[in-house]
Length: 436
Image (cartoon, rainbow, N blue to C red; front, side, top):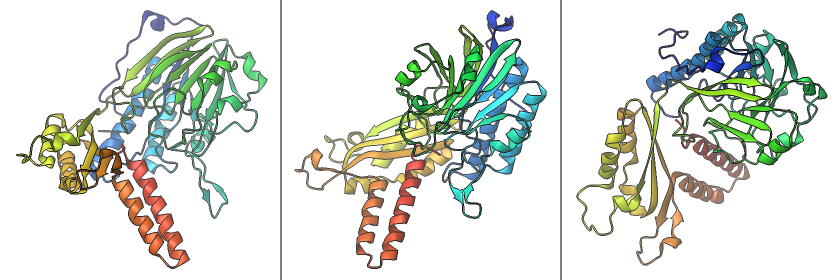
């Protein structure tokens, strides 16, 4: 299927207020966390390609909807790409979508996210590589706000739409930042001219479930800072993968939610984008438009179900019990997370054939993720209480083995190399857990 063809049009629920729009309403399509180019660790190439096609198709549903509705603004609030160096296919795809928006008279804005903002310095240039969105901004296809704009006064983009003055600013955070970025934000006084002042935000918001970003959660926007600020009537946000709308003080906060599932942070949410009608006196409508997406399921199996204490000789192995539990949940259109929790001995742990379970998931699901971080290893002696058990997971095993090797190394350079490798492997484990 061609990339510019959409099989499943998003459901369009347009009320009478939307159909007969008054002149004091600004229409907006809000999207975020599109994660174009996302690659699942260890996934089959065919499924990896299908996943990337779904990510592109979901973003296109948002742009096609914006063009069809003739909206005033198209706002992308962070993590358009899943990497700061997207491949040429994804770059070209976005360029084509932005060109269509511009041709239709839709103004586009984008905010840098934690995934698609370069932070590493290039040795030959002595500065970070440019964000991928900057090339679009240079061509006039959108206005780009880089993240971390809290060190100096921020200049808003001022627009006049049908006689109404609209002011747009962008605020985002990067990994390693601390504190509340909104409490430090300074905005030029020109924003006071706007009857509809908008802040695009990419940052964790207090009280909301986090998305899959690797940002340090210490960089968090508090509800108090939202309530105390007076510059912005509307905050249109990314980062969190579940859509929500809330009122904090005099500010309306709308979180777009992701356009596809890439983790289990919002399993009950339907991926999609938001269609908004904004006026000086508040929100006229806020519709979440679902897109075609894989379904997400999560199941928990406790060790007492695998080794029932009252059964001395079980008829089925623990692996067989798990597979029977997974069988009715597996579907080619499903992404399934298996959570194992409870206490077990080392001998029992090695009775679990996790490779066989993974292979079954690969054959019968779109993706299967196994989370065994809640397993605890008990000493073989049954008399020792459960509280004496140690944490047991691949991550803990890696730490234990690496520390042994580092302690045994006699050469200082070898110690440093082992320590560096250990940290790299731990980062890889933390990043891939819960993601595909």
